[in-house]
Length: 354
Image (cartoon, rainbow, N blue to C red):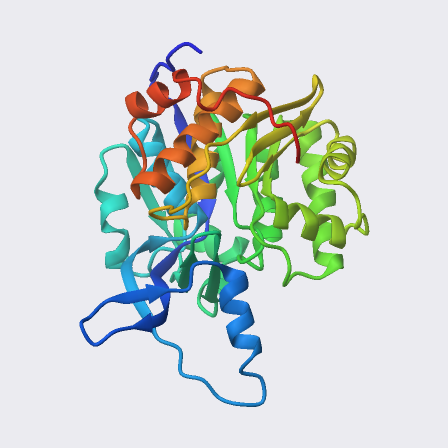
């Protein structure tokens, strides 16, 4: 794979924003200060289930506090890769929340904040994470607020004046469908969509969103990026449950007017597109340094590949490489670091099983 070249590509993305507190759950600790954490979600789940009808004290150890949410983490990762980003969302109003200062001060990022952020307690395990969100503030964000606080036509201008548009976290921005409708006429570039976990959304809301996304896919190239849980929740909302992931992705591809459907897993990623099914295996890390944001870094690598005109197999390789670097180092890679990983061959194998 040839090294990706930075051409000062521009992405406009919205619309969420969270302040994350990232913690681990204490399983046992000694008098000398040693701490053992619950390593898997199943282990912790069994412990909690055993406490039913009783009571329990559970200790969390904070690992870090930082800017979070799909939009800010996606934007930070893109900036690290050398891509210019306009980040439009809920990062403080009327003043920017201090958690987003790093993003706002990055020379490649322009922050346009229009609402207060949500709060998220992210509990990390070796095999995944639990995201406990407080969405009261972010739920107020809608098309009217966006228009009123940015100015009439400004959001449309920003989404028209980019090389790639990105709609992030439809699930937790509960009025996101109204924002999509507001911006539909201004889209002329490829659109990357990450829905996030739809489990709290009704089937009717999912079907309305999906119908709108299908209409958008007739106007511009759409790339839908989901993880396995999000794929299953989308299938449930569309009454397509109990299908194999590849079969479900193929059905979504057909119903979305030929949009590319990318599914990222812990084992790798696959894409259903007009060319058929392509896949790339990921590198497994027994002890990830940081998993919260891994999917956002995958999407940043995927976006970089799309902007650079790579084929879908190489786009998946770049997504896996960026995500792999992030979860193993705890920070997003530079373009050079990501390109080196992508060239290493570690992410070039096809998935043998989904």
